[in-house]
Image (cartoon, rainbow, N blue to C red; front, top):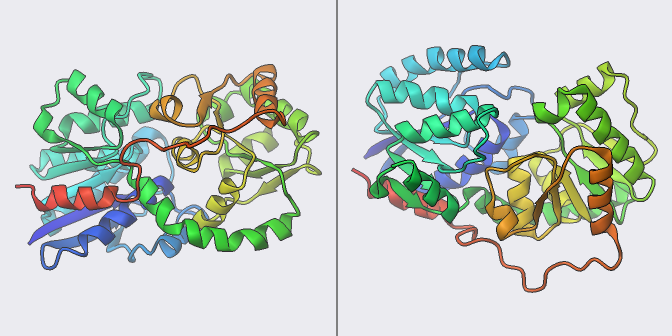
Length: 365
């Protein structure tokens, strides 16, 4: 029996790990599974509700790291994770994504000689100013099994000299969760639609430091939102740090036309997202979800580590300045705009990536 220790730290991690644990549970007596929550996201609206809705078991351990600078958070995770590995001695740890918990736990495991499987390996923005890019690159270099979501990720790893036998093209496991829970989300939509009284609307998410922490950038985005809100209502589940920045800078959003909400649960967000006319975001996960759903997505970033969402999806990168944002949004809101017919998501974005991951670990040495 292989002892597998899963690490979750931030909201996107939960959607990636839940289907893998479910798939592995179907291998009778093959795996012993342990779940460690680092506590990187610790607010109930940002974390606990995801465990409830995704059907994740209660974590075996919660490291309760909380917030802090990148160095503080990474160091705290490493200090608190090492005793866990020494006590439980897993055969593999499974780390998803690109958050600080991902790199911190991988580093500890590597130094203790414990094998590492990286879910969502090989993604690259080629922008080393992004902390997530550093986490991705370093985690891939020390991982033993690189579980990739797309063919461009495979090419990135080969270019970096990763041996082919360590690369496993499994597909996008986040889509597994979306496929499984989309019917439940659809059940919630009539109530949500009645509550907000909306038919056509734009959905907005915004949290990256490159957009939120720069005063001039955030002011441009807020101006664009107010301009667009005059044409179509906006649903804006606002990240706590984004709300804090807007308030501290004295920026004003049109609260008659822009619905500022607390962070939504996964099911509620999925229901709203699936019915949006357009999504404006800086989130990596939302780029993927809208690609699967076929919803037009404008990503306020200079680059993306998920280029397949552009080449094979519905995603477009857009500059943060007001004029560029308004022009791009109005293009998709134009009545003459037509969505692509017979749209198909990228290969292996099919709801069964977790099964391929479980098989890879089952067959591993």
